[in-house]
Amino acid sequence: MQKKKKKKRPTMPSSSSSAVKPDDGSGSTTAKPDVEDSRTAKHRAKDSVFTDLFRDKRYLLQLYQALHPEDKTATEDSLTDITINNVLINGQYNDLGFMVNGKLMILTEAQSTWSMNIIVRALLYLVQSLQEHLDREKADLYGSRKVELPESELYVIYTGDRKKHPKEISLMEEFFAERQSAVEVKVKMLYGTVNPERSDGEDIIGQYVIFSKVFNEQVRLHGRTVKAVSETLRICMDQNVLKEYLESRKKEVVTMMMDLYDQDRILEIHIESEKKIAAEEAAEKAAEKAAKKAEEEQNAVIERMLRDGSLSIDKIASFIGVPLQRVRKIETQMLQES
Image 1: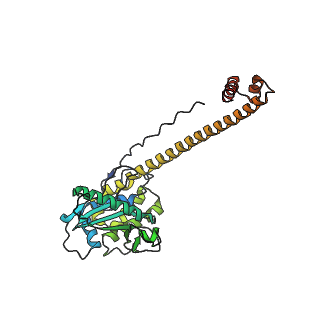
Image 2: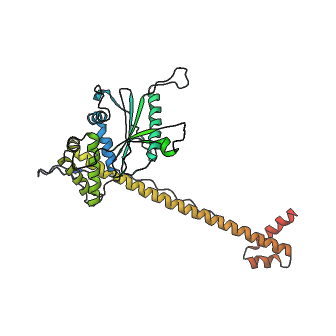
Image 3: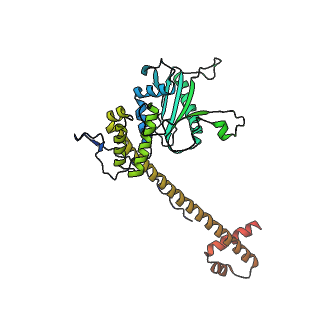
C-alpha cells in the first residue's frame, strides 16, 4: 500500500497592530482606536496591561511598598527587573519578577480562572528565576563554598469572582494532602478590593484588580470589542483607577488590549489546525492498520485453502479476489517453511 504524504503544517502569520486617534477635543477621556468596532479584544488583555504597568519603576515601587509597607529604604534605583522573557509559545515566563534589597519577588499572571496548578507554575517560575540569578552571579554550584540565594516570595494577583479567598496556597497541602514532600512551595494570594465602586485610597494592587473587574463587566456588556476597551478606560479614569498610567499610556493600552488578541486568535487557529492534522494522521494510521489486519486475515485464508488442496491457485485468487502473484508468493513461502 502506498503511503500518503504527510500534510505540511501551516506556519503562524503575524498580527497587525492598531492605531489610536488623537483626542477629538470633546473632553472625553475615552480612547478612540482607529479600528472597526467589531474588532475583538484579546483574551489576556488584563495581563498585558499588568506587565506594561509594572515595567515602569514608579508603579513597580508602589507595588513593592504595597507588599512591604514596613520597608522604607526601597527606591526606584534599588529595583532590578528580572522578568523572564521567553518568546517561545510554550515557554515558561512569569509576568513580573524583580529583585529588591536581597529579595526575589515573583508575581505570576493575574488570572481570572482559578486553578491550583498555579502553585506548580509558580514553582517552575521560581526555579528558572533562581537559575538565571545564579548564572548572573556566576555561582559555582560544584564548589565547596555555599552559594548565596535571595529570599524568595511568590504571589498571584487573582482578579476573578471566586467566593473563597485563601490568603496562601501550599503545594504540600493541595497536592500531597499534607504528607511530607521533598518540595514545598507557598504562594501568597492577592485580591485587592471586592468593591469596584470604592477606589479612593486603593493601593496599586487594588486599582489593578478594579481595572480587571471593570474590563470583565464591559466585555460582558459589549463583547471583546473596541467599545469594551474604550469604556473600561473611561470608567477607570473617571474613578481615579490607574488614572495617571492610563492617561499617559492610553494609546499603548488600547493597542495592547486589541492587538494581542490577534496573537491569541492566530494561536487558536494554529491549535485547531494542528488538531485537524493530528486527527487526519491518526485516521490514516488507523486505515493502514485496518488494511494490514485485513491482508493478514486474507493470507491466513489463502494458506488454509492451499493446505486443503481442493482448489487450484488460480481459483483461490479468483475466489478471494487477490492477484494470482500474491497466492503464488504465499505458496512459495509455505514450501520454504515446510
